[in-house]
Image (cartoon, rainbow, N blue to C red):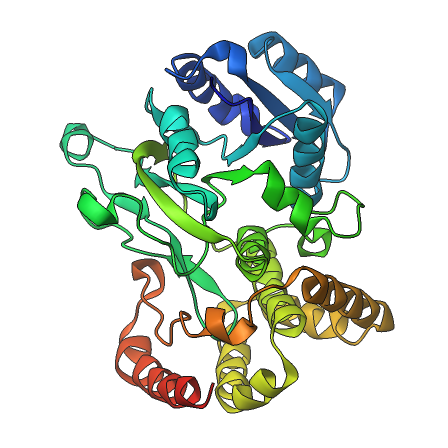
Length: 364
């Protein structure tokens, strides 16, 4: 008997007008029984116009309005309603995607075949721009990597597609599942909601690194994260360098460090963290987003911010069944992402920081 599945899509302003219809069409073509999955569209920063559009274009989906644009809070609302509707598994997917017909079936199968896994991520491929890429698609993510300084990046980005076989049919993701397309068990969400406040994601993250935060909690709670390579999804990926993105990614990197890292671990990484942040501050002057960098420091000077950090650290402690050091051994010491590669990073920063990280791993 097929499990009941909820699929969560999040709209923001005119996002749906750009991407929803092809995404909707691929969901309608799923081989998984249409009677056993329901699509929830969280209309973040909702308006009368966006609500009317969503209801008209995708009438079989359940559209839920929100006002403030907080992506993490929108995800929490989707999880909450899907659980209330009796879903056994919940899928989080980007709207700027198109799925193969077995995408959902293979995600469900990945968790049914791997009882220790709490999350399974699809194989995320870059949406083809031409016939050559259609025949030989490139990889967007086979699971994301966590750097020990608190940020994440995709694995195998822009490489040729490759197959998994044998015992590696569902390889474990050592870092975190990309929020572009993953499935999570109901039991995991219930375990993460230890305070029973329907906060599965930490809503302070607002946007960016929310998938990293959720994955870390899932692993600390004792569940594995795996790749479902036969669940294929094509992502219309755009690497943006907006100042809004920079603010949230950098601020949330610090949130990750201060919420998850034990104090002794923070002490061990202080030297490379300080050096990296000095370099980043200098780069912000050259890049024209120094004001955004100052907003990050201002955030961490507020008493209210530290109160939220203490609450979040306490929640992580409550759900943890696995020592943090066991997760940290799988963190990377190198930044290996083609979109941000440059000679200074490749030949100076990466070798030095990676050498330091190898020393720390021996200590932990």
